[in-house]
Image (cartoon, rainbow, N blue to C red; front, side):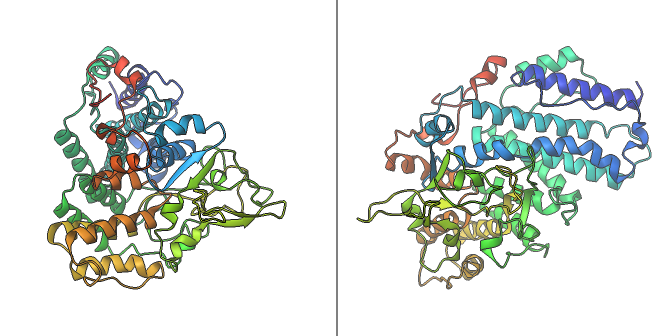
Length: 496
């Protein structure tokens, strides 16, 4: 079979695999037609590479409504930072807030399907590289690195929600029937095997990807190392966290953006702090839809903005953890005058009772938004996270040190705060608690709180302290029932 037919065959097999195996979603992958092109020359210039990779990138991006569901409903509303009330979304969000989610939750199934679509698309990119002629080894390695980064980052997001999931690999000469059988019978990977698979992909990606992010959103050496750092952090492999963090720092490419209040605005998106991001524009399918959820009722908005009935609210107790001169809390709305000219307080009532109604406007509204569609880039990992990851790892390895405080003080300085030292946090435990608390203040509205609390064994107790019947096994979400129905070898997480 010539290379042209192999390419079409692989694409068809990938389509069949996802349709038959991962819950029957049949609209996720539009099959490309290559009859006008010779694949032997298709990848020899950048336009060909971009055409092949565009689908894989687009499927891997947690954007728009998927971003709302993954980042906020699953990873922030289950914590002590924020929650949601109102609108049609409340019915879907409440089970996550209250720790009583079901095994057939549509949002979890949607996240599973979305990530496996991206994985299948990435595998397609990698598969078509075999047998291509006239393409430089350097270009082939770069394309493979991009495919393996997309694959590994998609598996990482699955791991964060569900723990190890099936590593599905299809032989190059597999028939459609064989592909279907592999998909229906592949069990979950072991934890060790899963982590090692991601480490191999991300290490390869870091070796062959460029440093510069060009264009925005393209995989880079820093992005691969950043996801690898977060994976090691999740595994509490502290020495590896230090090693990979140092590799990012030593690139000399990233830096903290000088104005935290503009970092998440459209104006600030050309920064060198975002290591792994998805670029957005104010257009359906490519946008950031967080902002309409954050406006309180009657908030004066521009005519081209939209205010949803589904309200994302910040706990008063979290707001009160900030020091008064902390610049980072300036992006939390605490009061306003509504469209009727009435002053509205959001933090406390006149008697000092918490209202739990402050609003995070961290993603500043896009002046050019089209209704609900804003163009603020969505960030997954940024440089401040890497600095704090390294500080946490150093503390876990050796306790408080000058190097720990130097890293943490970079973040504090940007927030307008004074330095801390061993005089303030003299033991490993004290500094550990400080880092966890300051990570909340630095990364609120970015969906990192759940994984941080789990790592510190405070996720379940936190849910219980808010009055919910949270159980130890709920550190992982259930494998969606649709997936278990499709694959009898897919073992459910304990407790479900």
